[in-house]
Amino acid sequence: MMIKGFIALLLLTFSSFVFAQGNLLDRKYKLGDSYQYKLTCIEYHNGKWESTIVSICKLSVGRDSNGVYFDEIHWVSKKVFSQKDTIDQKEKAILVKPYHISLQKNGKLDLPKIEIPAMTEPIQDFNTFFVAISPQMGTTELKSAGDSISKKDLVKADFSNGDFILKGDDCFSIKLKMTGVTKITVMTEVDFLPPQVICFPYLLDDMKTPVIDGIINNFQMVQPTGNQKFNVQYGREIFYINSINQRSDGKLLSATMNNTLNLKLKINCDKDYKNSQTEIPFTIQRNLKLELLKIN
Image 1 (cartoon, one colour):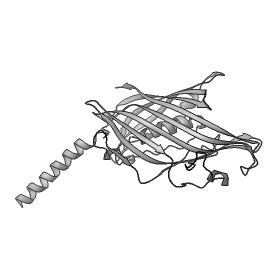
Image 2 (image 1 turned 60 degrees about the horizontal axis):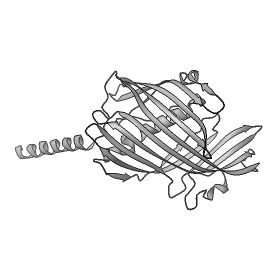
Image 3 (image 1 turned 30 degrees about the vertical axis):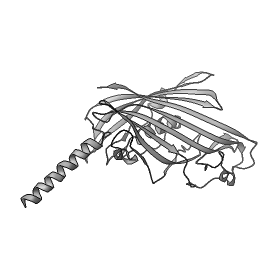
Image 4 (image 1 turned 90 degrees about the horizontal axis):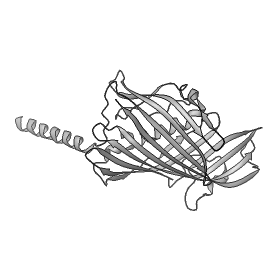
């Protein structure tokens, strides 16, 4: 019994050591902690600057009845800069109902219901940054700099909002890599890549033909243009997220996202998304940066 007890204790100690050493991205929350993030998105259409959107949210740490820690998110501002003008959409941002996300293993990172269409991109992009460093994504499998894994399961998303995006689907295969470790920070890269197989029903037969030769189309979107007409976009989407986390508590310090879409744009289709007025190649480039503004 003593020998078995010693072995059990040794295994438990070793297991704890491996956990402590291996989970460099483990998020350690402090109840009552609050801080802010600034999210900047610079968007280009066919190589020309289209807009810069700057949004800010405040996070407050709480704990639910099951003992799971979470961040409660309050959006506090949004500004849209374009060649035409600057639009302050703070009144839109503050209308978003507070919601919770958690980087604990038993926590949730569900997207809230989009009730304020103008906040679709900030909410979805912010959530994507946190998904990229979450245990659910598989970051706990990365133990040291240079480690990498490829996820077996595909990641699918519906980004429709019932307003200016009537239909939106994309799908990715995922690769993760721990790119660096210092005494203070842990750096990771997550690649969201087109899968090898079609992973959602295409709206049109045309979509079976790759926009980029040899690469399956993994993006489709429908937007209304008025008078029962619609723009339909489809093609290849790819993006990379590079994150820097604070090693002491796993808090996300900063991250960047490089998001490229090579598409075909069908303009003014009918209600069946056919008989378009014209069809043109269309490229969207989105460069995003998330920055931690304040730590209490």
